[in-house]
Amino acid sequence: MAAAGAFVRFVERMASGETDSPEFPLMPVGQACDMGRDADGAPHIDPRLFDSPEFARNPYPYYRIMRDHHPAFHDGLHNCYYLTRYDDITRCYFDDDGFNTIPKGSSSGVLGNTQLELSGIEHKRRRNLYGQHLVGQSLEARIPIIERQAASMIEGWDALAADGRWARDSHGVRTVELGRAFANEFPISVVCGVLGIPQAGRGRFYYWYNSMMSGLGGSQNQKRGLEARQDLEDYLQVIVAERRVSPSFLHDHAGRPVGKDIISKLCEARLDGDLLSTEEITSNVALVVGGGGETTRGAIMNMWRLLLEHPTQANRVFADESLWDQVFHETLRHSTPIGGQPRHNSFDIEMYGRRIPAGSLINMVDVSANHDERVFNDPEAFDIFRPDLYSGKLLRSGYRKDGRCSHMAFGVGPHLCPGAWIAHQEAVIGSRTLWRHMKNPRIRVESMAKDIDGVSLAPIGLGSIRELWLDYDLA
Ligand code: HEM
Image 1 (cartoon, rainbow, N blue to C red):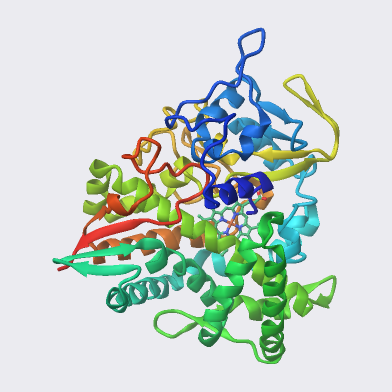
Image 2 (cartoon, helix red, strand yellow; image 1 turned 90 degrees about the vertical axis):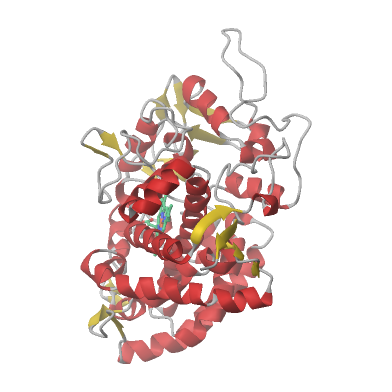
């Protein structure tokens, strides 16, 4: 779930308003700038590119060069390697002995001692501690609650419109910024629900979450992130003490208990016969909420942006709500919120004639795998009906079914995202609820950031969009 440090740096540079660099001019989307060629004609990749705004907004032509000409690219500047082809990355993800997650890097400081750092049997034992409420019948039973949570956030839009900052009404049209009005908080409130965070603590929880997230990636906000995690631990101390004695339960929409909440489960979980400490419980809570907030927010934002940019597909979806599942999967293939995952090779290996010494940092570039033309035809096109993408029930341990491949947005293998099922439900249920509320939704182009031509929308690039301004007709 943690993006590699380089991905965080791109976002920081974009946020600081730095938009161009002499070495790497901003190019029309889909075209790479010229970084020279080998004697045999293969285009070069200059590793300074990875820190440039051009790469953050337009990564795909560069990843295509890497897949075609440098599939095991050595970046001597950042001292790491990049794997960019779908088949290579899936092989490595499944090989937990050969490609381990230790050390995961800068997420560890802020989130604490989590399973992200672990591989093999130790990883498996901890992963099982909290997974049950994120999947299966327990999740199904809570779907009406997720629906209600989405609906109640949308009900709050009238008050938001009265305030006028992130929503406003004019001549029968309401304008909303989907992030502030919905997507930023909705995933956190769903995850708080399954964790069992009391309603009264959720405002503070949201602040701690934001502080921890901004402290990931070894950024300058790390101190604030560490303080937030300590505050979270202090807050959880009291809750943990209570639930060790008297566990609390999750309920379905009819008020029937469907099992203990995740914090109560963690309070009774044992590792090697010992109960988890409050510090270990805090790390697990931080991990679950950290894994599920920004990612699902980004998925919802990118889904709406991409769908509304493709009106023919949007009309099909608006006529048939079951197609939201396909929108979810194609969005995660086309523009996944997470760039990739770091791994370290346990042994010396050789790939494409290049020796990679044991212990090297290898970035598995999921974004590039999702655009590998060896697997997905015309990968830059957004097409919810594409015949080569598997969009059925999420695959637990495989990535190919009935001649179709799944996207790589949730990873594959032992670290496959345990929140994939709940993220899917949140994004699809949230989007359906939004669609039922908004008549004739469309992007308010004049309020959005523009690309270098000054006319088209700024590309999504790596990650997900921060703002999406929509107009819709008031009934
Ligand atoms: C669209 C939304 C999401 C995306 C794209 C996403 C993506 C990912 C990816 C790629 C990984 C694999 C990390 C690796 O291979 O090292 C991962 C792991 C993880 N995710 Fe998600 N995630 C999403 C939503 C969620 C949600 C909703 C939760 C929790 C409620 C969650 C919790 C986790 C956790 C705890 C891990 C660590 C698993 C492990 O190391 O075994 N994620 N996620």
